[in-house]
Image 1 (cartoon, rainbow, N blue to C red):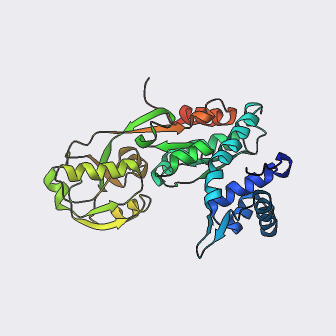
Image 2 (tube, rainbow, N blue to C red; image 1 turned 90 degrees about the vertical axis):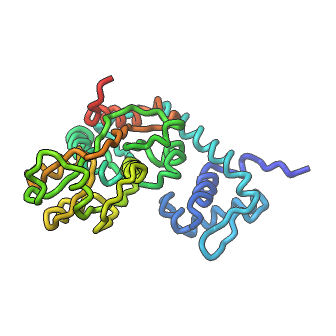
Length: 308
C-alpha cells in the first residue's frame, strides 16, 4: 500500500514550479518565468523530490527530462492549476483603464501590419497600462497554448483551430499580384497567366496558414513560377519590388497597405484562388473571462468587416 502524502506538505508554489519545469525543461528558464532565483527553483525541486519520493526530473545534455512518475503527475497537476486559475478569474473585476494586464496574441507578420496599429492606438488612449505581446508561436502547439492561457487570442487563417476554439470571422481575404508602378506590365489593365509566369517571383515562405494554402493551390493547378528570391516575411517585399522587375503574390489588404503612396500596381490573379477566412480565436475556457472578453470585443470592433 502506497504512503499517503499529507496535503499540507505540498503547497501551490511547488506545483507551479513542477508544472514549469515539466513545460520548460530548464531551471534557468523556469526561474525567469516565475520571477524567482535559480537557487529558489532548485530548492523547490528538492522539496518536491523529498515529498514525492522520486527524482521527478533527470538532467540530460539538453534539458531536464521527466521521470515516469512526473509524466503521470503532470496532467492532473496542470488541470488543477487551470481550474484554480479559472476560479480566481471568475471573481476578478477587469478595469481596462487601470489594468496592468499583459495580453499575448498570436498572429503572423502580415497580421502585425494589419491588426496591431488600430489596437495599439486605442489601447494607448483608453488602457495605457495594458501591454501587448505578439508571439507567432507554432501552429502545432497553438491550440494547447490557448487552452492553457499562454496565448489569449489567435488571429489569422487558422482553420485547424476550429474544432478546439470559439471564433468570430473578421473578413475573407483575396490574394493579388503586386509589381512596381513602372514595371513593363504595369500599363496593362489585367494580368494574364502568360505574364504571371514570364517574370521572376518573390516567394514568401511565411508560416501563415493562408499563404501555405495559397502555395498549395498554385501547385494543384500546375502553376509553376520562376522563383528568383525566397524570403521568410512579407515586410521586405515592397523595397525589393521597387528595385527590380520581380512580382509577388500577396494578400490584397497587405498590397493596398504597401501601395499607400502609389508606388505599385496591383493586379487580380490570373487564376482562381478561393479567399481565406481570417478569424479571431479564443479557448472556451475563457469565454466568460472579463479581460479576454474585453480584448476580443476590441479586436472584433476594429477588425471585423464581414457582415453577419
